[in-house]
Amino acid sequence: MQASLQVLFLYICITLNSFKMEDKKMTQNQNMLEDKIQEVGRRIQALREDMNLSAAELAEKIGLTEEEYLMYESGQKDFSFTFIYILQTVTGQRTGTASQPF
Image (cartoon, rainbow, N blue to C red):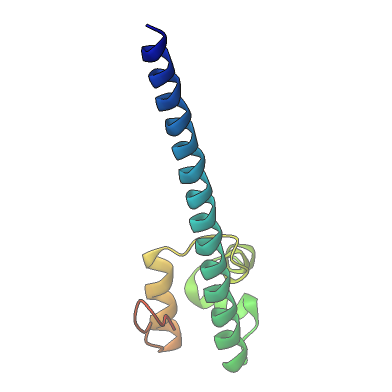
């Protein structure tokens, strides 16, 4: 009986450790994703500035309020397909590949 309890305890410890490792991986992946979203936002800002448009002007062309647009540009909001498609249409830019967006 004691051996069975030791095995069960060992299994629980290994499982808990596995959960901790998965949580750490998920946190790292989430951080990487947030970094990528902010990077794309900076690229969109650079594109807007290259076009000599204010945030308000580009927001109007896209059909958003300036506040909504700035949330995308600052990386506070993840990009929807619709946002990317309209941005591409309005700016005349290609979106690139998955490894090199914009």
